[in-house]
Image 1 (tube, one colour):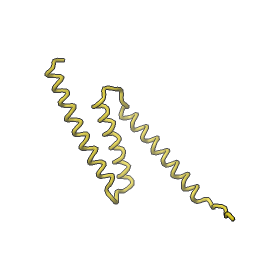
Image 2 (tube, rainbow, N blue to C red):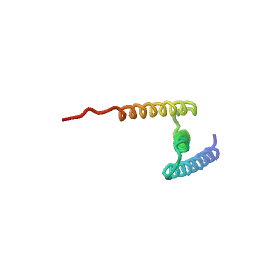
Image 3 (tube, rainbow, N blue to C red):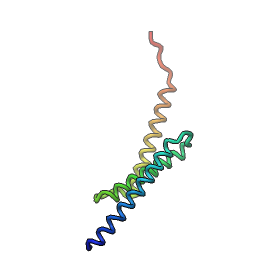
Length: 100
């Protein structure tokens, strides 16, 4: 690869990183918006995770997760959150003993 091609690739990478930063900022602003539906919020959080992973892939020259690996890991996290929430509900619904 000649220097001109390297500069062009580097320029494209910087443009992509700027776009990813803009998307990250917009998604974060939407997450902090009051009255956001839980389903919408879940989609925004997942989109933000994908944006972060794309930023890592574009910025670092290391092996990153595939989209499927990221989606699988996010699904496992969501499942664990749901299990924890159900356990918390179970704990809060159990009667407490009276202390004297």
